[in-house]
Length: 359
DNA sequence: AATGCGGGGAG
DNA sequence: CTCCCAGCATT
Image 1 (cartoon, protein in one colour):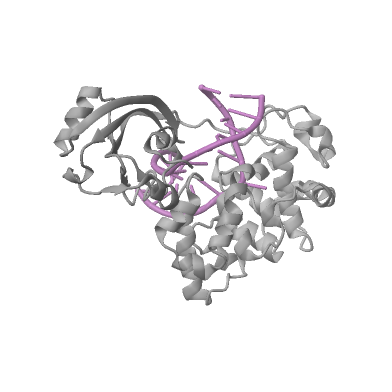
Image 2 (spheres, rainbow, N blue to C red):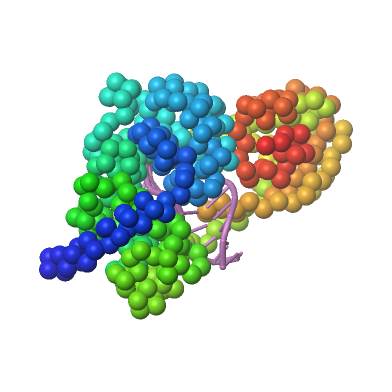
C-alpha cells in the first residue's frame, strides 16, 4: 500500500503538463471533430491494433454509409464486410453490429453513457470502454492501450512484461487514482498521443520534445531501449496454397469463406492446399467438372497474417463454361460487381488484377 | 494464461 | 527480416 501511494503521487505530477501539451500539440483527426459516443466508438474499434493512417480511409465512408446505431444494427453482413474490406480483424465489425443490436434492445437505440453499460457491449473491452467513457462523456476512467503501457512503464521505470494482463490491471488501477475529473478526455488522449508521436514504439523516442521528461525514469536513466519489456510473439506457421482464377470469358468464380475462423465470411478465389503444378491444376479442374481451355501460371505471392504465413502460387484457368462445375458454393460474378459488392481480403491482392478486379 | 484473428508501416 | 500498432473473444 505504501508503494502504490508513492507511485500515484509521482504520477500526479505529469497530469497538468501532459494535458497542456496535448491541447497544444494534438493532431487534427476526423474522429476528434464531433466526439459523440457513436463516432468515438466507430473510431476506437477501427483503431484497435490498427494505425491512424490506415483508419483514415475508412472512417468517413463508414459513418456516411451507417450514420446511426440503428443503421448499423440493420445492415447486411456483406455490406459491413465491404466497408471493412482490407482493414483486417473482421470480427470487429460483426461484434460492432451485435453491440448495435444490443443497444437497440436494451437502450432504445441510444448509446449508453456509463462505463459499466458500455463495457457490456460486444467487442468492447477495458480499453475501449474507458476511451468512449472519457472521450465522449468525460468520465474519469482509464484507457490503457499499447501506447499507454509503453509510456507509463517508461515513466515509472518498470521492467515488468507489458503483455501480462496483471501489469495492465495495475496500470489501470494506478491511473484511475490520477485522472483529473475535469480533463479526463484530454489526459487519456494525451497519454495515447504522447505514445504515438513522442514516446514512439519504433526507433528512438523523441524525449527532448516530451512534456514530462523530467518525471520519466527511462529518459533520465537512458533506459528507453530496454523499456518497455515485452515477450516475443510465437513464430508463424507457413502454409502453401494454390490460388485459382477460373474464368469463362466474362465471369470469375469466387466463393464465401466459412463463418468462423480466418477471414470468416469474406470472399475468395477458389484455392487448395499445397503447391500444384500446371498439370495438377488441369486435373483438379476436371475433377470439379470444369474443362480448362487454357491454364496460365501466375506469379507467386506471400501474405503474412499475425499467426500464419501463406505462400501462394496462382493459375489463371480459362474454362468453357463455369456452370459445369459440381462444386457447391462457387459463385460466378462479373469482375465489376465483385469490385463493388464483394469483400475480398488483402491476401488475394496479387491476383485480383488477373481477375479484372481493381481496388 | 494462451491462442486466434489482418494488415501495413517503420527501422 | 522484426516489431508492433487507439485489443477483444474464446478456450
